[in-house]
Image (cartoon, rainbow, N blue to C red; front, side, top):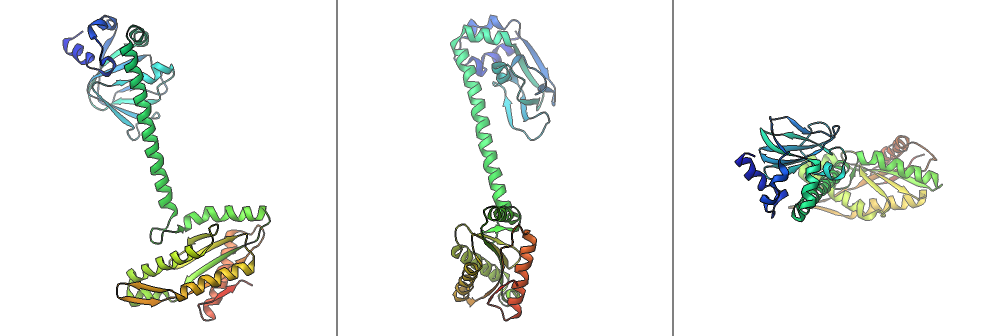
Length: 315
């Protein structure tokens, strides 16, 4: 073995704490392989019967059969292929040379001979496999956390903090179906801030945003835990009240209207009051969400025509 390769092999994690002179003879059948940049070392669809010790260079690990985003990188002193050696299955990832790389290729039977001969080698191989599994677990946890974060961002309105119309398209029909299946009453409500354009024109959009957030917070605090609330449009909100009859829905709407009318909006030195109008569409068995929203919208329009700051029910 080349003296430089000898020294690099002895420094590999596989031989940590091992008297290398006691095992070097077992590596006589091993070969050194030079990889060009982008050359594939391991592929998920091709069996692997070697453990590769990285002597110099760098390997890139990609999940699946394509060179997608890098899952992990391996540098000199580390190994590749240990999982498929241990479980006897195809590689679980695509491993590609990130740059010109030199590896020591140890046949599978030699790996097991090393394990049988040296407890330290066995312990090191176990540690390498465990470390790889732990790293993959941490990557999975991070990925899941990012996915949950992205899903949350996609379903929540950034300004008000309540759910958005995208979330509504999935959640509302599911609850409507559940109500119909269990023969429960429900109501759809659409609320709109009265003269909201006047607020923006008078005080500016920053104050308008404060008003929107205040209304959303007031609604969220005064609805029941099982009620669904979304920001439906610019200054418009939609609510689904499951297991709720028409009179109870009207009472909830009146409470929301009165609470918001009695609340004062404050921003710096500015303070003012706002009102909302609400339209209600009572239950229609197996009715589509779009139709129910349309009925609530027409009731809302009627509330606006009749003077605003009021609740109307679709006819």
